[in-house]
Length: 65
Image 1 (cartoon, rainbow, N blue to C red):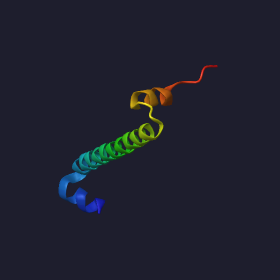
Image 2 (cartoon, helix red, strand yellow):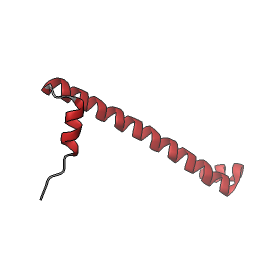
Image 3 (cartoon, rainbow, N blue to C red):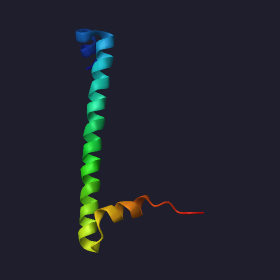
């Protein structure tokens, strides 16, 4: 398959196309991960009664020492 793309758009074009596809996939993965994390925080907030902001602060709290 890559050879077909290189044949049609050239080596440089194939590289740019691959790069664009990988950036799009990275963005999709980021959006999926973000939505998943927001849903987890929302559910945890509902169960514990803690605000989402407080939960985020607790998650990012660094251990001293």
